[in-house]
Length: 67
Image: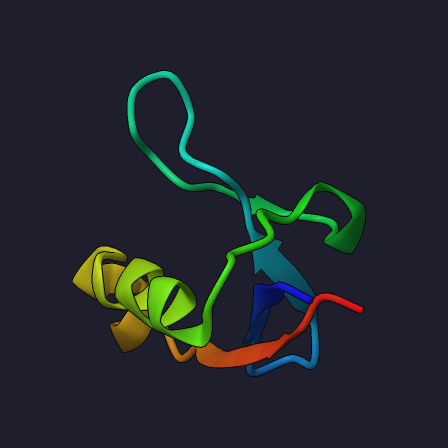
């Protein structure tokens, strides 16, 4: 099945978390480029590892089915 992490901005914009880049940094991408996590727990861990600036900037994170 798999799961993706969606970020919703205050202005209503949507984006998703990518797989880590070569430098180990996750970026915000379109849905088609989002990393698909095997479990909700894996997705939750990825959210917890995001820099605090994302949390403070008002993004709301949600974990959804990749289907």
